[in-house]
Length: 342
Image: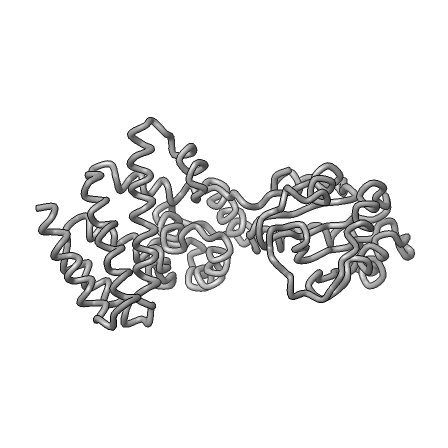
């Protein structure tokens, strides 16, 4: 099931006995939690709603609650948080012994008056486990992993519309760029944008420019464009700014390497006729990042991209093995790169 179909289902109070929510999207996860909670009247929640953290509470305790009849109500709601035993996450240090056999039995015959929601939002489901295969058959599985650009735009506009706000197209584009289409980060930025635009009820590009800081990924994206555009002064200034803001040189370089790797992969796959969606799926990268990468590499030579990538690998080695000044290393990289592509 998708996020939208689940929300529509819950609005009709047509909940199923068991749900499994996957994907690291805190904003959407919280909205789903709120929607589930509306199924239990406020006056009944003390007795008919409970949330259990699997990193501190035995699964058997949650299952016992789920098997109990609702107390003076029609439904009982049980949240099972951080269900790491369904994922590839390693929790060998945990001293809690979870009753997986009991869960398997419950999934075969779920309590019809209970709504049990498993949250496996950290790590990926481990499809090799028998319990995962069983829960996939018994539960409504809601994947929040792939939130596309169009869905993010829609969610932002819905959020603003609830308070009668609008956002200009250029402002929304800039907001997506500066946050790297991180939905939770975007939603955290909206309150201050609304506050700054309270008089007009319209969020413009200037407000976003002033109030939303660029993420490291966005700064690196600009840095990559400066490198490939042979704008040495702009590239060095931006690199110095990142160092001055206490960004770790190794981390900056790692993001640069990752970005150039994506550009090279996108360039090769574009040559072989891959579409944006196919590239995103093949590389397991957010479609918006692929969209920006495809726009960047259209007029770039693959040999130049490779030379820049190899130069950054050399910087990484130097940063790890010597105490050389990172700014000097980056300046030497730029000079060498410009000489090679001249």
